[in-house]
Picture 1 (cartoon, one colour):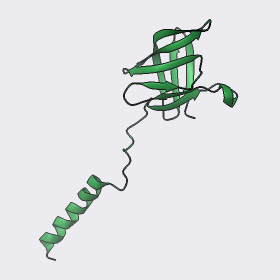
Picture 2 (cartoon, helix red, strand yellow; picture 1 turned 30 degrees about the horizontal axis):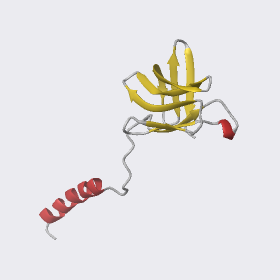
Picture 3 (cartoon, helix red, strand yellow; picture 1 turned 180 degrees about the vertical axis):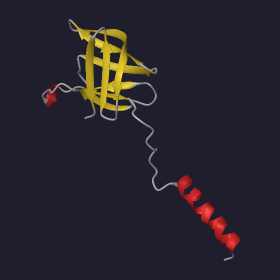
Picture 4 (cartoon, helix red, strand yellow; picture 1 turned 90 degrees about the horizontal axis):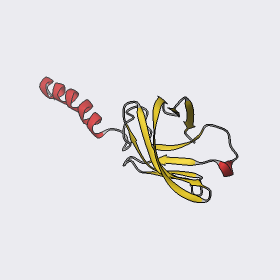
Length: 122
């Protein structure tokens, strides 16, 4: 191998390794609301409600929960949640916007009119 071939190989291999990567997983790009969240208040397991925010803006909620998030949208500092809640035995539609106060890998803190909702990853 001559010097030119060596330099070419030395420059090509790291680029090839970066392109192909060592894993098929998507690289981490910072905190995201996508994924599962539960209320941070300790509750018995049978009362714990799990919200799953999906990448396409839809959401699922533990079956039988008193309120169910069906969709979400995010701006730089707010999150809008839409779904249904149970009132007097009847499901009613809701759409509400919260201020996004904190978003880390494990914490989601929302605020609306001075009231806070804190969620954590299960």
